[in-house]
Image 1 (cartoon, rainbow, N blue to C red):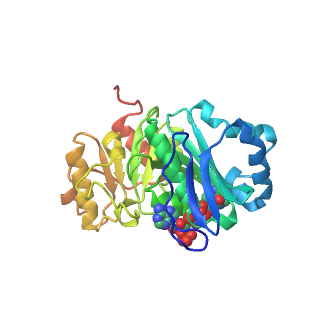
Image 2 (cartoon, rainbow, N blue to C red):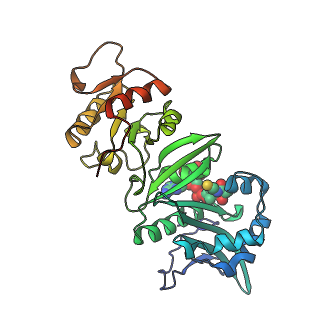
Length: 317
Ligand SMILES: CC(C)(COP(=O)(O)OP(=O)(O)OC[C@H]1O[C@@H](n2cnc3c(N)ncnc32)[C@H](O)[C@@H]1OP(=O)(O)O)[C@@H](O)C(=O)NCCC(=O)NCCS
């Protein structure tokens, strides 16, 4: 990891209380430790120092949290989640420079949020997400979800580097999910409704809202070419935890790309009997995708088409 001056440092191992210490040079060290209700005031002071734009990205409106809110968030660990503060110690001076945490969601995943003071950006955000992911994984929380403003490029980049998949868009905000135990997320353990996995290079499906209104859970993956770092595990001989539990797989990737045919074939092999929908082929070339359903409609109609094939009720366990 690099400090703000570009020097490399190695963190000291986390102690039993979950405290980590990182030498960042110049006689300073960053302590990353769990937060509790007693940190409410320190958290309030930290938010006071942040720009209105950063607070808007963190809270989705220009909002300076009150002490009661800060105490509540700082004690998220008492309600099954986990929160951490990053504190820079320099001589006698201690300054909070970041906070990050996840709260438990009704669907069994964690809901993650983070904010890093400008001066300490460049590595600390992803580092704190890693700290939370490790904590969540150790407690059996397999995924962390986050609502992120579409304009928030740094946060989108942080999550995409961790293999994020989208659960849909709403009013300039995308809900992303990352896995805590592997490169890919899995479905939330208590997710209700039909599970639709959509692969589309844009990362956005025109049927998202209609599927949501029909009670489906839709995960949208941007496909092998757009995915950073880990690529597509299915094409690399492995399995995708989302595909393995999906009620339908909708592949809207380039129909003229051989990789798309290979992906469809592998999904058929791994999930016999699970309907696979593929993009409409204008030239009628369908030999490589036999037993797949061609989907040519968009938006509400495509969802109606999918549900007419798989039914609306979730399969019994
Ligand atoms: C979002 C935020 C926490 C990110 O923290 P950060 O320390 O600034 O993160 P970084 O700058 O290290 O991450 C973004 C960059 O790291 C890169 N990156 C992230 N994870 C990476 C990884 N594992 N490996 C390599 N690069 C990585 C990204 O590509 C991006 O690079 P670039 O901006 O130089 O092109 C921080 O910008 C912030 O506090 N913003 C305001 C509040 C906010 O938006 N919170 C999120 C609410 S959901």
